[in-house]
Image 1 (cartoon, rainbow over the protein chains, first blue to last red):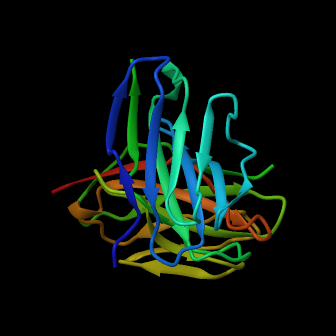
Image 2 (tube, helix red, strand yellow):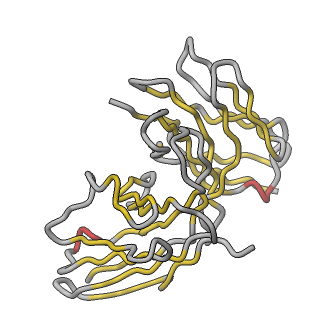
Length: 116
Length: 113
């Protein structure tokens, strides 16, 4: 069974440019998460989807970040325009879904963004 | 608020040494607790979990016990191997928060032969 797929794995852009990350979750997983991981830190949730609905986007900086999961399967996270401080690893995770606090999340390898 | 504090690394051990990585938490609700591992170049993987007080999670020789009285979930392994070299993250999820994970900062473990 394929795991969570993310692309690209690495991206280098200049500040003020737009950038997009793509994630394809494990087949059948209804819940999809995007996390931000700064160097030397643990991941922090940006947004969570239940199917195609963004049910928790309280930590997403909406002035420059946007996300979509139009058909409730794969998802795209966009930054426009990128700033130097956005350099980080962007992780995607998925889980079967539900309201249990111990619903296992499966993580992709991440996209490492460098903003110059 | 909810938070996780884990010991800072890096931790360097010789092969077959005993490992402890401390993790304590603060939670407004009744959390489930997790240890995730991130091997070089790979994504985070769930290592073990515990969902209620006094539960012991275990996997691949690693163990952690959910201690409500000390709000701790320390990771232990009796004899580490070079292949255990990775970054280890302690995390919690509050029931009713739809499974949102709150992570510690991670502890890098290096095991020397």
